[in-house]
Length: 123
Length: 110
Image 1 (cartoon, helix red, strand yellow):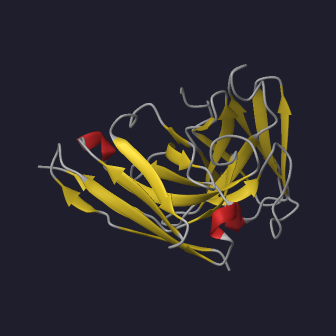
Image 2 (cartoon, rainbow over the protein chains, first blue to last red):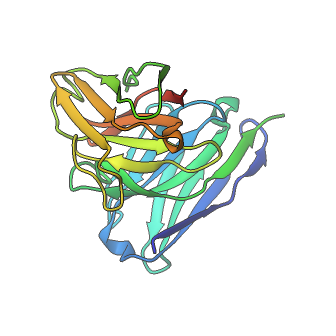
């Protein structure tokens, strides 16, 4: 079965940094694009970043461009999100999601999701 | 990357059919047959139920169907069941290789 397990969330001060990880199993990791999607508790979904199957292409949402960096290690079956210059509005549950389809940086839909890791930016 | 427009809430009785709309622009929904829908129960991760406008992943009930006309995509749930009560999100590919979500619709089964 496909499994995506996020980790690395926590409480961080405004202006601080955090690195999220997503460990994948149950599928051929190097064949798929991967994404980060976040959700403020009680609110909607927002696409954050995506990376293609070999890591050569990345894309970012406007609100995180220049502050967040997505990367992957295909040998370790892992996806990462380096989050710098964090703001209060980055507080959310961050999901790792596998990309489906052949269009776009990391697919055009999300066919499997992890359970999320919570990031809280607060002083 | 403006969010797609969905109604905040819809409701229906068991056995009825409901439709949730997802309004975009000619930069997203209107230009690509790449709209998907996710279902999210409280405290759970989202689950894909429709992709590429009208395709169902394996294991998803055929009571869920999708369509598109112009800049508006729609999700129809027929034979409404109590377990369908959840939040529903549309998502579309947009020019530039990225995606955008709708604001979400809360479905209440009366």
